[in-house]
Image 1 (cartoon, rainbow, N blue to C red):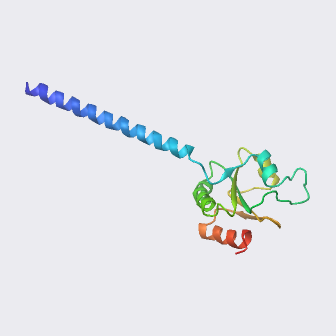
Image 2 (cartoon, rainbow, N blue to C red; image 1 turned 135 degrees about the vertical axis):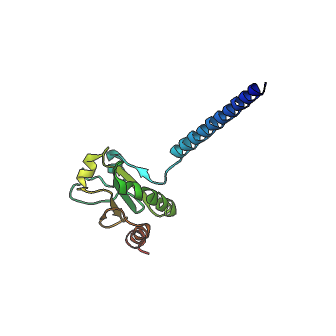
Length: 159
């Protein structure tokens, strides 16, 4: 009788443990899905969208004419790039902090090699800072947030 009570108790504890584990896995999956569905502050661009929103370098190959109404940053990146992964959350933060003042675009160089080639992107991440008027500035490599803010404030926003 004592053995059957112990075996029943162990079985009940095992079932409770499995139920908790299953519940935690469902909660984790829901959180991951929620994060995947959450809206990003940056905007991913294809070549076609780039030509409409940033610059139509095919129609005007010898002239820079920015098509946007707010200053912009274009982040040329790749999914396998460690420094790109490090700078991505910083760019999301900056896109939120400056959401009424600038736009931050992202171009995946793996999906858009022709676009990356048009701008001579040889190392990633490469950031293209685009003022509303004037020529853009290219910065290669991951920059600290303070340096990015300084470039945004002085070059893009003339603060």
